[in-house]
Length: 362
Ligand code: PEP
Ligand code: MN
Image (tube, rainbow, N blue to C red; front, side, top):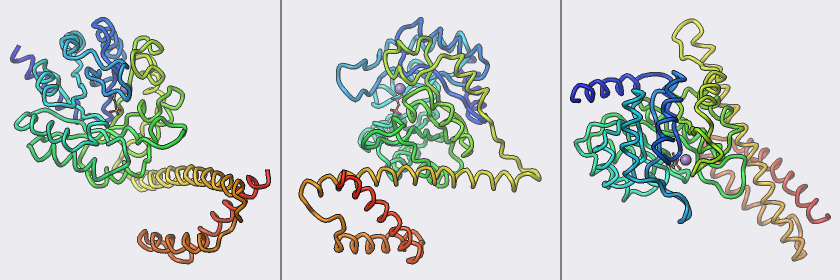
């Protein structure tokens, strides 16, 4: 038994260093059969390195399935024994850390709803003092890099040596095509700040649906992420949580086969590859700016409706001056010239006025 544990520890070290590192498994452990069959079918693909399963589920509303709890941990132990796959679970309290360690969980992860709360993260950090286990930290639900960094610091300060990051997107107001907006630039900045830390993309929670999983995964690989965490289920439509975003183990393999894996080669092609990556970043940022501009116009439409209801003019000079002043100040901080800001805001403002015009005269 001792040596099996030691061998698994060594294996986890290898997996941690492997690129890409692929983590997959159900959103939630539901039954022993489901966990074991998922693990076996994932292992059979030969493409998955770590089995994930939620044991304690932080659900937005009470009454939803809140996880099977500690009784699911032996199922993971059994799945590991049968497949050789190391296992990872989400922990949010000291007791959960204790239970996970008791049942030989190999890697822990901190969920987005926990990263957001420094009290909880500190509780986890205290429980992890002196414990030699890799920890993955998901981004907080809100787009706050300091909170994400703070969680990393709390966990690092108690001596945890292997820390990885998981980008699972950020909550946003209103409907977008994503369940959690990726805001790629935030993850890119987090990667820049922590160049030696694993950065894994969780396309499942970013997408919230199956049809864009591949696209989101590809984007992350294009941005040189180190791996993926993909939710999978033997019967996705009937999953007890996150049914819409889960895929079968075989579909995970198919998706991994379809992804174009870009290598970070240090050969004569290095220059072209670097250039390509930068261009991809520019494309992603441009896509996001387009989306934001679209959202801005929707807000302008709403303002147009209010103005129409209250019989107010579209153009209000004071407000326009205020927009310009703010723009100059912000723009200067971001290293943008006054001339550019003027032209940019002018164009945006004109588009807003056109939108409002339509609303007010419709
Ligand atoms: C999960 O991985 O199932 C989960 C709850 O994720 P997140 O913390 O990203 O919402
Ligand atoms: Mn989930």
